[in-house]
Figure 1 (cartoon, helix red, strand yellow):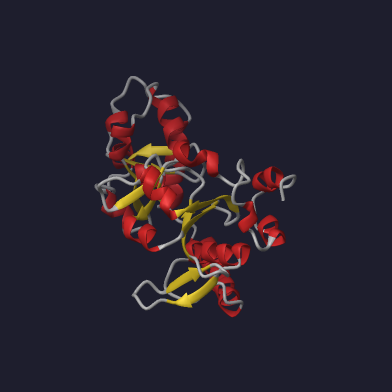
Figure 2 (tube, helix red, strand yellow):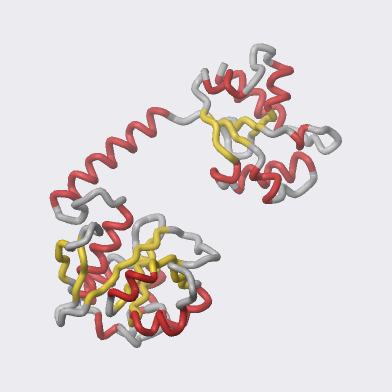
Length: 272
């Protein structure tokens, strides 16, 4: 059935359908190429035994929200096929069925397992936090010479500078910035002397760093809520990529440069 569906996706995508109502379909099926999709109603007409998307799930297809997958290919395909832009509101109500490459996924999982084993042996990851968070905390510990001490609370570990200043390390892992900014619990800011935000790209290299005094954050960004949001526009002047104010806090310049993205390295090179 998979091959037949992929062929129908190519067939449907080979011509435009602006005069049809297929654009109103709530479910589309991804083909085996980036710009090949087909509405479920079209499939049902061509393959009568497919009545609902559950029939496809039983044959190995996986259902996800189009908004969750965030596929630019689908938006471009939709506009080309139906001669109209796919709005964000409409995208949230559309489901996409795709057939995962099980072999490639299994190979990737095996690679992750092996990598996790190495990172555990090298004391980069030690607890139940996700990899980007622990990796970012390790970056901060190495770059700023922080001491990692078991916390008396349930948070796990606390970080301190060599002169005993409590430092909160926040890790933001994403190539795209959130409009809300980086979220920090106000109580953690109040309990610390410094807050370090490590921005990590999807390739796990550091995109940028913020090193801010906690008192400064409370004065400039705090509001009546329980959380503080550091928006890009508000903190852009304090990024390591543009500001030298806290570069003196860097203990290992070599480590900073080695694990930074090429763009950050170029901006830091003449200031370190």
